[in-house]
Structures are given as C-alpha cells and as structure tokens.
Image (cartoon, rainbow, N blue to C red; front, side, top):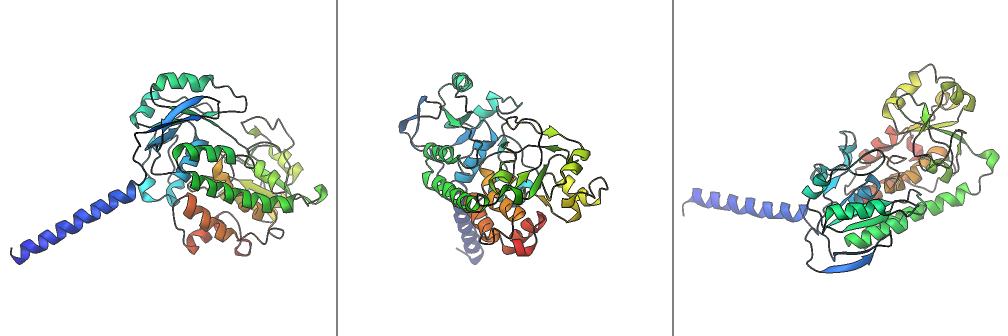
Length: 365
C-alpha cells in the first residue's frame, strides 16, 4: 500500500469513528425495551407501557416541557415552534424537533402528526376535574399506542407528583427527583422569607402582559403565582383569579395602582416602556424597576405555566426583594438549572447576559 492510500485509509477510519461517536451522543437511552409493565395513571386508568420507552410525546406544552428537562433524547416532538430568541440556549442537537401541535387551550391536535413520530407512549393532560373522557377518546384514536393521563398541575408548589410520575413512566426517575429537589429547596427558602413579611410592608407589583403592557392577571391566578409566592402584593384587583386568560386594563388603572415593580414577559413592552410617556409617571418606571422574564428556551415567569417556572422562583424573589434574599446566588442557581435540565453549560458571561437582560444589576445576581 502506497503512502497516499495509507493516508486515505486513516482519514476514512477517523471519519467512521467520529460518526459512530456522534450517533452515540445523539441517541442515548432511546431504545425501546420489548417488555411491558402495567401502571395506574393519574386518571386512575390501568395502562400497559414499555419498561423503557424509546420515544415519547405529549399533547400539551407543560408536560412536553418536563419531558425536555428529563429526557430530551426520547422526546419526539414539540407542541409549538421555538422562536429564534428561545433557541439561543438550546443545544444544537435539540433544535429540530417536529412541531406536532396538540390539544390545549384553543388548540386542536392532528392525530396523523402525532402518529408520524412513532411514539411508544403519549402523555395526555387531565385537570383537577378528573374528567378523562378526552383521554379515553384519544386512546381509541391512537389505537395500540398507550395514552397515559398526567395531572396538569399548574401550582409551582405542588407539581412534584406530576413531574415524578412523568419520570416514572419515561424511566427517568433520578432526573425527576433532582428537578423536584431543586424546586422544593428554593420554595422553602422563599417561603421562610415571604411568610415573615407583614402585609403593610409588601412591595406592590404589576404583571404587564402584551406589547402595550395593558393585559394582566390578578393575585391568586396561576399566571401571577410567583408574585404571591415570593411575598409581593399583586396590585391588579380585577376579574377572577380562576380564568386562564389575561384581563385587559387601562393605563389609568395602572397609574392608580402605581406599582413599585413591574414584571413582564413581553420583550417589546420592556424595550419601549422607559420611553413611553404614558408610563413615565408610574413609580416602577421612574425608579427603573421594570423586569423582563428570561425566555430561552422557556419563559421563567409564566406561559407556559409549568416546570419552566422553577428557575423563575429565585429570579422573582431577587427581583422583588433583593435585600431579603441575599443568600440566593442566582448566578449559581441558573448555571445548575441549565446544566441539569436544559442540557447546556452556560459560561459566566452567558449568565450575566441573561440576568442583566432581565433588568437585574450585578449586585443582585
């Protein structure tokens, strides 16, 4: 064999080894076991599922978010497309999930799109009513593919049972326990402080939604629950806290409430509020106390209401009461959360960019 042939052979061997390595990296834990097990799901249905599912999908974003956190290599599709901004901190190997839609809110799913992903298990949400008629209907249409009911718990303080159940079904119990431990640790810290704040001393907070900031959710709602949890006083005394839709308000109402802090999930509102004369006399704007929820790959504060809000607990605490939550190191919390559950190692500069972009100064990180 001449020298040129030897070089070509060596290059080919290196390429083959590299391709094998990439395949192993992209496809761990995705082989379905041939054995089945019987479980009782969260709708009290008896379902047979693979011992180790190779591919899983969910009909709604909150459960899909949990699946991405626990087992991104098993996830067969997303319920909506990530935006370019949301993709910023998504590892490249997870950026091309199929957008398969789902059954949630006003959305109606497409059975063919779900079947095209060839899932071993389909998770379907049930609410507090316990009505499983939709789950049973979908099971009939999905045929032999097991549909597993999961309680869509929208309360950040009680969602551990749903997270652990998803981990049990997907065979990722250790990861699910880690996620719940992270959440419960921060909730405990936050409650120790927030429970000690007298009502008269609570800072007033307005949750601004939409690009004009004039949609909101009142105290007691699932969408504004982090304000309540962290000891803030939600100024929006309107509507019912049981609605899943935000409520329209006027700028005059916001001026009357005159909140000390404004939290928003809308980047357009955040970019414009300091230059908008309609808002300029509101205390939070005058004192530069407007904060934007980080949003890659999911919003920390709201929408979807789910496990993505777990990292929003320490962030909201630092936003409202930086002086009371000095023992929370938001930089290290963010680094740990993203590495463990968003599968990406953030640099110190990445974290600084995320937190400064949300309105926090370096002393509060």
